Length: 183
Ligand SMILES: [Mg+2]
Image (cartoon, rainbow, N blue to C red):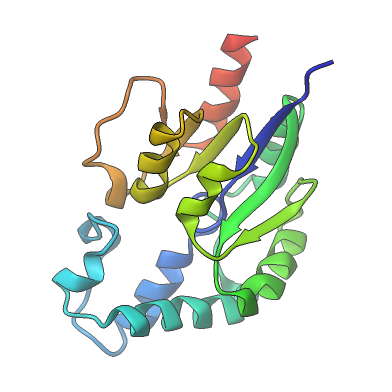
């Protein structure tokens, strides 16, 4: 029997790392709200150094025990997703943060089979999955190019990209509903 393979992203889809980063950044820079983060490279607009930004994101993961989930029923919703196939965590990050992410997944009782870490998000589109759930406009571009199925998890930094109806989701429950309607 065909078993669907679902690639579930972490940052910006199940983990609200930008919330942690905003809390940190707002203590030392001009105040930024999440709604102002309207592009993937928003740090340019705020004159924040790219390397500082990514270093700070990694630091937020170091404090994984206080990093908020994107949704508060992650365990149940990932269980529901798993009923449609194999859910793998597919995340792009600095290797040093993998251990923090794994601890966080365990803390929130996220249901998944494999943990796959890639060094750059756009590499995800080369992987063998039937469905990607992701928030990165750059990754979405690659999924389209490689004719991969995806759900774009709506975030302020991807609101400007136009995609077909039914591809944008506002919660993981939306993903479950779409999958149900296809069955
Ligand atoms: Mg992401």
